[in-house]
Image 1 (cartoon, rainbow over the protein chains, first blue to last red):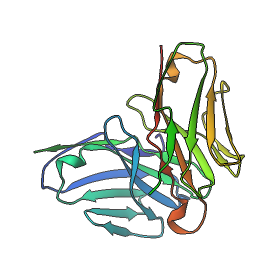
Image 2: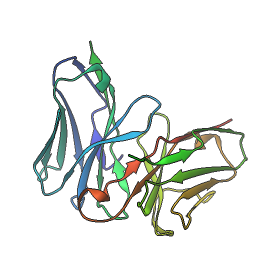
Image 3: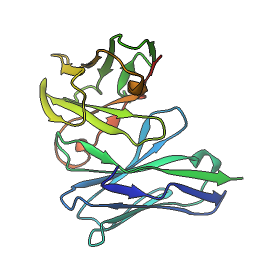
Image 4: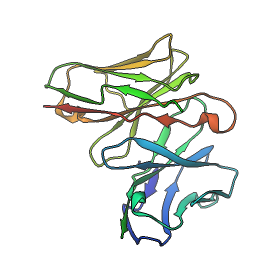
Length: 111
Length: 115
């Protein structure tokens, strides 16, 4: 994750909103993704955004993209205890190309 | 909906042994990717295949090899295993095309422990 950085830890209270931030360096990335990983489990695709979009909303999830600053954020509204997990942002060019993951942010939701 | 299948889910090997990990992509997905996630680390790209040909290569050790078969499943072969190979190995699949079909969908992973 040297090209994609995230803060390591975030703690929020149940019912509050969570905002997880990510910065990336590859301006040629076509897609930016958010994946969720629960303890001992696989990577679950939460949502994605095309690089020519500024915002995407998907139920409780809102993705904001500032392409100029290469900054991506994931907002989770009404955070629940089941949202506790590690969240990875990732960038990719699509097609057959690899995806580069960020360092991951561990979200802890306090009941 | 069908997802990416990986087998085995858990594997324990001794140093210097060999291991084979299998990946079955989502039906109609023709591209397979392998990633390695060490403890507390983010997933690192190893290698990918499109239509049975290697399409991209990352930080895959020479001791590892992979291939994609005619039914699009893929196998990652790991020889002369080292303690540092202990990790979660993910397979992902996608089908290149417009829109969200470029997205990589990940399997549950194979947890390899080398003793």
